[in-house]
Amino acid sequence: MTPLLQLAARSAWNRRFSLGLVTLSIALSTLLLLGIERLRVDVRANFAQAVSGTDLIVGARTGPVQLLLYAVFRIGAPASGIELASAEAVARHRAVAWMVPLALGDSHRGFAVLGTTPAYFEHFRYGARQPLVLAQGRAFGDGGSPAGAALYEAVIGAELARRLGYGLGQKIVLAHGDGAMAHNDHGEHPFTVVGVLAPTGTPVDRTVHIGLRAMSAIHDDWASGTRLPAAAPAFGGLAGVAAPPAGVPGPAASAPAAQPPLPRSITAALLGLKSRAAVFAVQREVQAFRAEPLMAVLPGVALDELWDVVALGERGLQAMSALVAVVSLAGLVAVILAGLNERRRELAILRAVGAGPRQVLALLALEGGLVTAAGVALGAVGCALAVALLAPWVQAQHGISLHLAWPGSAEWALIGAVLAGGFVASLVPGWRAYRLSLADGLSPRI
Image (cartoon, rainbow, N blue to C red; front, side, top):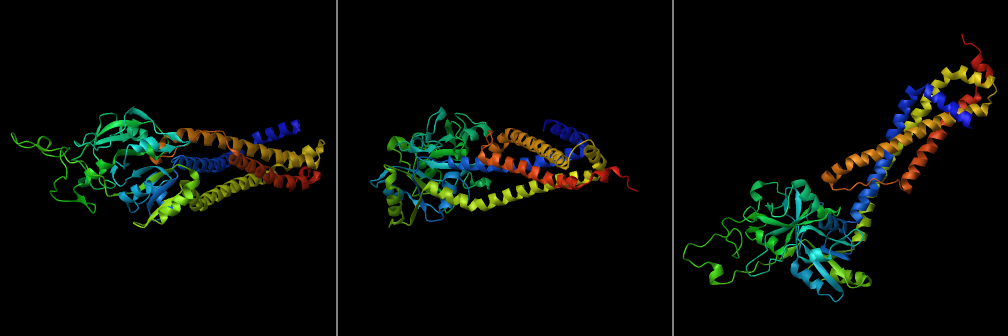
């Protein structure tokens, strides 16, 4: 076999230009196959590790996938909110250990703003139940002190801090909604960055976290998504309140400032239970909540529904990549068959010096297999380089962490399928050469 393998390699090298193009085609199709598989695996991993340790997500009645996407991944249109009082009533259930309210809707330079409570930093988990860690500074206060101290404080995610160059003490202005209209900025209530979270590889990295009371305070003069003209703030002692004239005692001197109120409605709430065994019972009771129509979804179940939705697209991409690989292998067959006519004399000489028809078939099959193997190896290396080079850009632009890792079982299966397909395809010209007679190549054609 070794002499035959060396002969096949030298024969392929002798026609390196045409076979090089075929190798490049196979490499590109392999890169496409492996790249899509790597992207699919990493996207699923990113979604799966975004929330952990949360037993139920409670929100308004809508689709479970929509609630999960908006409340956890900040994707899609905002769902209708629920009353904070309803979430607090659910939190008083005997089986509920903790409840973290989430209020979304505002943004800062394209990054989502999340209004929540300090309990978020205590109970939220990601990945393998990893807690949030502050890389710098501290968490914001609850803003519940009479003077409203620590109200306009923000904790930002690691990616946001890196991309915008923010650090502790940075003043930021939030925008109402998606920030598409400049006059919707909450410029009268600037926030101060008091903490920067360590990277998590989740949407937390791209989020501005503020207190729930602060979220309510900046919308004090808003109604139905519109700023009220010349509205007076409902509570004093806070940013945006004009100082009293000289000699006139201010509110702080005459009476304690009003406590910032909590918002009436929130987007969703994360629930942690005392026992996982009670999750379905609590889910049923939440969905039977009489004061307001609510829905409780299990994050894992909602993710499974999401994968069912996107599975059709995944299969479409995989089918397209497979077709590209088939076209590349068909090109391999065409190139070897086209060169077979020019090699009739070469093959006849091999037959004349003692090579049997089976050895000729094996020679051409090995030649095709070597070309396929070279293309697959080139494609695998190209995929690894693409992941290594594009991972920072994909992370920055789309928030998806791509990992350079050894191929998994699915990737090995794809590599094996392409190799097997290349070898089988090479049997076609080999069979053609097998059927050529010895005299066919030695007889001059006129």
